[in-house]
Image 1 (cartoon, each protein chain N blue to C red):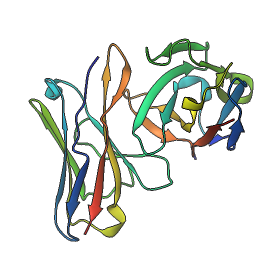
Image 2: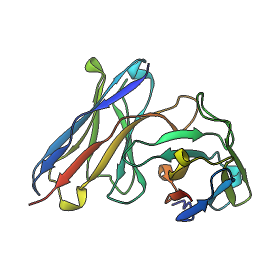
Image 3: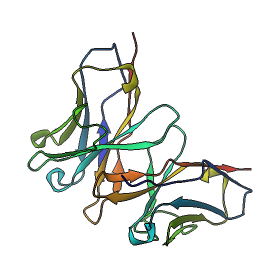
Length: 119
Length: 107
């Protein structure tokens, strides 16, 4: 069974750093792109970027380029999303999702990780 | 960048048919995917490639795509179908592009 299990909720202060994770199981981790998707409170879904765990190739949405870093560690089947300096506007739910090999769509999603940034 | 436009809300009585639209310039030339998101849950793919259903998704969910409008149709609507629905396409400038979402209310 394919599973994407994300790390837990985080409460941080502005300016702090953060790295959240998405651990995959039930399939060959290195064969699929992993996406990160942001959902701000009461808002819609926004694609942030991808990582391809086999070679750590990344693609970013222009809206998020330079704002976050996406990475993966294939030795432990885990993808990451990190910030070097959080802002209050980073408060959101963050989902990881697997891109289907058959086309550019998400076929499995993590349960989401709530990030709250507040002074 | 490519823009997808969805109505903010759709309301339907139980047992009736709900139709949720997704507008975009020449969207008929793209493959459209639809996700259902129930409150407090992660999204779930319900239709892909315009009209195909993933394994385990009810046949009450169907899709179509032509011209400048794609549609998700839910027949014999049930209370459990309430939630937000998002369309999504692939675009060269931004890979995954999502519509703004439509809240389905079952009256």
